[in-house]
Image (cartoon, rainbow, N blue to C red; front, side, top):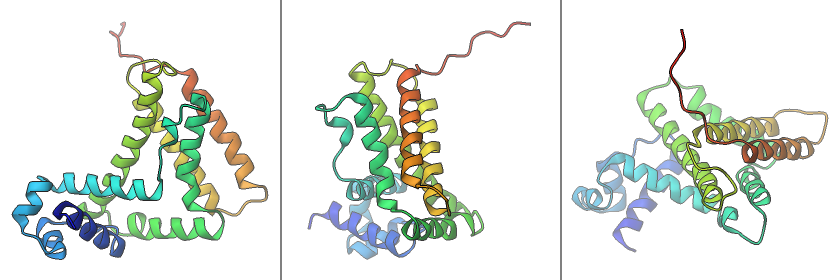
Length: 203
């Protein structure tokens, strides 16, 4: 196995055991059976290692990239991307289990620097993934060019809310209401331009 892959596998094992694992250079290098210098060669910073690992995890959980399937119109492709993120959660018991783990890892404990850094790493990768979708659509002309930060945050908020809804008791079909929400969210994003730039204020 190549050194870089050994390092990523060791880091993945540590995260699987503890989602808030610090992934220090010494700990990961020891787990991978490589020198700290070798690890630094492939990942100059701890953040570079964490970002590469999270990107790998997302690729494993969400194989393929629906946004690149140009046989479908932009609207359907963006919908498929959002559905793909929610699909691994499952519904009812599976969703409760997933959110229970999230609560115990990031909400219940004291928000130490280690917990905060672990969560922000996951958040960065999620933002990067949504930004990628919107960039592809903008390059094709389906979205106007410009700052997409507002729409990235909007779509992530929608996904977070729907994932929680899957875990909560409900009297109606979650998937039907979820489909309506996803359609409304995609329609909103495709109809909005970039965030306006701040102009001079008037007295």
